[in-house]
Length: 268
Image (cartoon, rainbow, N blue to C red; front, side, top):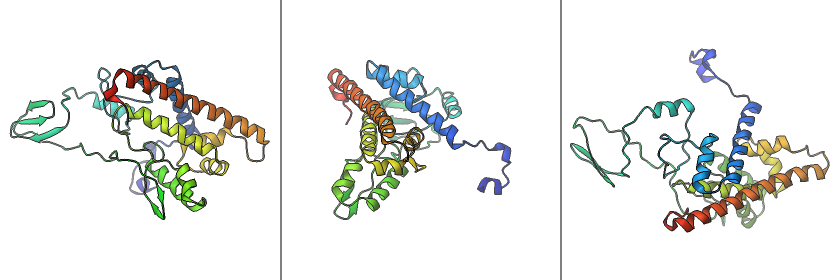
């Protein structure tokens, strides 16, 4: 409405109706589960995720070593791939009159070059702490890369559950990712947190009604209504729990295999 009120032509808008957008998210989530199920190594998993469009990289020939919840559209990716002068020498240490000095070396530069700093870590990785602690709430993500949903869930749990032990059981914090392997850690923790949510009928019902929770919406569309026979709902919930448990276990195995091959690259 704000854009229309400022004279933007209506035909420039592309709306995403809820059910259609939910179908897109469902397809992406299903592709993610399938990629984990079929992967034989972490490298193979990343290839499958890329083929499915779940994860993207600017240079198809270079495997990224960092992951920080960045998002990109197809058109943005096309434009970024037009930039071919990419320096991969680690973090910038300082800028001198005629060069950039980085962790891995120096790069000669025109003395009139304009430098634009875009390296700030907007979601710094910090040690996890109990979210509820004797009247104090320490806001943290309880779903990977979903700070707004996490805040809504924490507020709901604070209002509707009786004690810190129960609240902390439902709200296990997920530290922000930093490396490529952290994607696996985050996905695994997401699956396990979702299993905790599904074990709580009242929370499952609430999640199905919250627009911020795409997975809850998907479950709400799959579940039979509360008036249906309990066995029907239990069967569907059981199928979802089985799929999430198997996927989390497979990620465990992939991370263990990677740690055995490269002990220094263990996700933390």
